[in-house]
Length: 172
Ligand SMILES: CC(C)(COP(=O)(O)OP(=O)(O)OC[C@H]1O[C@@H](n2cnc3c(N)ncnc32)[C@H](O)[C@@H]1OP(=O)(O)O)[C@@H](O)C(=O)NCCC(=O)NCCS
Image (cartoon, rainbow, N blue to C red; front, side):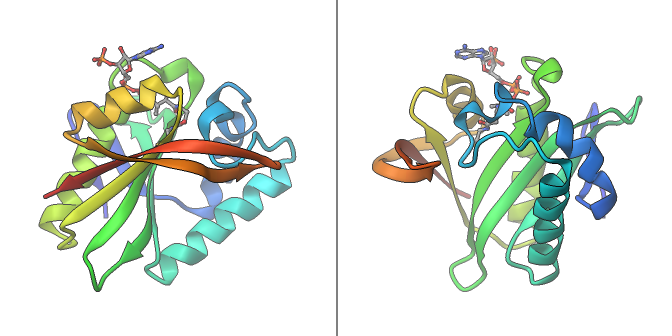
């Protein structure tokens, strides 16, 4: 399955993508507002990708590798986690390599994924969370039509530090 946009192609993440995920998963700037801190060990990134592939096989989550269609440059991935098929909902996330920020790639990829969720997967509701202070991600969510619905105190444990999140939601 391939999702195509004007500039991007999205395909399900595979084990072979792990070495391409490593450069941004190990980048503290990219990971500053992610639920887990930057990972220095490439084997740990490979294990995380293997766990993601296993989640996809169980239909619990979807991870879409984002590539620049013309150059095949691996830009990052979009995730759809905590899929609940009974309630037709999931949680959206996105991560893009630092050198590709600010060019509209996250918004373009996530918009295509949301359209796919609504048209082909029958999902009706999406949530997303940002760590407080992550204004880039909040901007992307607002551009996608999400509205802030709540504030989650100490929602994330990042290496022992409890972090507040903003809760965003979208009904299709
Ligand atoms: C959040 C993230 C995915 C955005 O990717 P991106 O491809 O740069 O996003 P886009 O270019 O589509 O949109 C970014 C928007 O933020 C704006 N922006 C850039 N820097 C900003 C800042 N310091 N403060 C506020 N907005 C900012 C951009 O101008 C752009 O909005 P615009 O199109 O209206 O100009 C990327 O920064 C990232 O990977 N962050 C780390 C992972 C993460 O924390 N993800 C969020 C979890 S859901």
